[in-house]
Structures are given as C-alpha cells and as structure tokens.
Image (cartoon, rainbow, N blue to C red; front, side):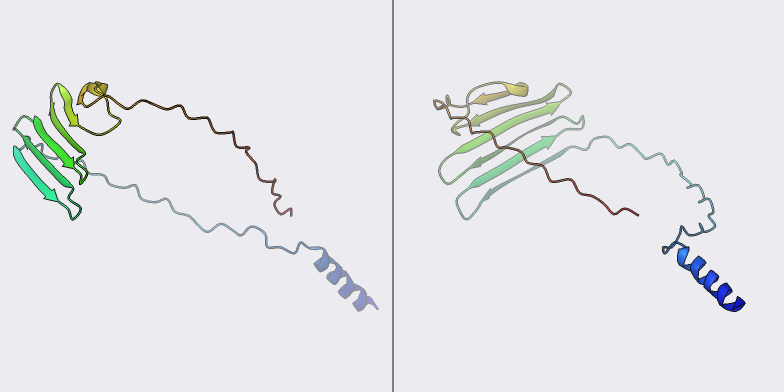
Length: 152
C-alpha cells in the first residue's frame, strides 16, 4: 500500500505542474568586436564642362528634346521641350548658377496662365472659365471591432 501512495503522490505532483515550456536558458553571449572605421579623404574634383542634347519622335508623333551645357564653374543652362500629336507644346528654358534656378516656360497647354511661382516665368494664354462643382457628401468612417488576444 505504501508503494501505491508514493506513486499516486508523484503522479498528482506531475499533474499539477504547468503544461507549457518555460523560458529557456539564455546562451552564452560574447560582445561583438567594435567595427573598424577608416577615414579616407576623398579627392574633390572641379566641375567638368559638358554639353549634350537629343531630339526624338515616337510612333504617335510626340516630339521631345533636351539640350544642356555646363561650364567649369558649375553654371548650367539648357532647355527641354515636347510637342504632342495634337499640337500641344511646352518648352522650358532654364539657367542654374550661383543666383539659383530660373526657368521660362513657353506653352499653349490649356489651363495654364501667365504667373511667376518659384521664380519661373510662364508665357501661356489665359485659363478657361472655372465651373463650380458641388461638394461630395461626407463618407462615414467605420472602425473594426476590437480584437481579443489569447490569455494564458
């Protein structure tokens, strides 16, 4: 009878223990070696003069072009343009130097008006008359129902 009581006691204690793995023992950790950073002075080269340009026409008749040149003082001037098959065109002539970036836009695009935002000069016809549009009704915002996690 004594043996049965001991075995039953061991079984009850085993049954009472938690049925999940506990936190494991952390492995031995070693400090990582500090990275070696070598400071290398990179050479500074003066600006190199350049000049380039291209002109293209695609299968739909859209023409685009770009030309730019720079001097040895990092001053740049150039232009880019496009004309689509419907005759709408835009040409931008620009200068970028110590005084900043300055551009002149010549266009016949609808909806553009002569103005000067950000030191850009627009040469365009006056815009079409604006038509008032009714505001859309507000859309109600919905939130997801709260989610509940597992409880241990």
